[in-house]
Length: 192
View 1 (cartoon, rainbow, N blue to C red):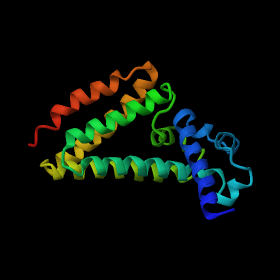
View 2: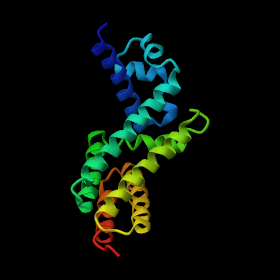
View 3: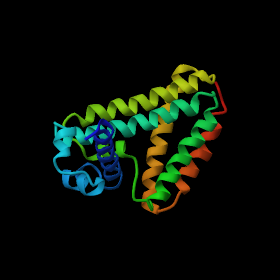
View 4: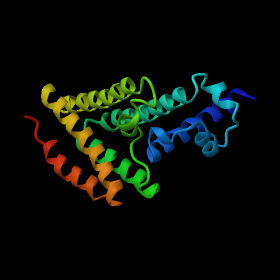
């Protein structure tokens, strides 16, 4: 098989694991479920993920975390924190509606039910949330907020969006994300 074909199979498996995490949590990401969803052959699991299921799940969480971190950095590059917040909310609104409110944040899913299921998940989740908060704080500082306030606002943004995603799923409605955006927007205007 070509390098591109191997990389394609691995990527399909990671993408499937991310989606399963988003919809079912860590407990729902089994080797069988990933193989069925991705269409990958059984032997490819240990070929691409010698550490088995746990390596695959951690790889999926890392991929999802990196995707959001990149989006935050790119959104904040212009220095417009309002636009960054709007892009984050728009991303989650699309993701929720595309999946019929079945899929939330895979990093939050891993944070909630991973302690006994996937060793090292706690460290990875802390690292990813910390990366998101640091990226947001850096963007806020670059747009004129004092560093301590930028860090607090970054914590508020991550917490509010993650909570809103859960509420959107529960209510099958995007209103909680709109509420978060409406209430955080004025906070992002004050630079004191």
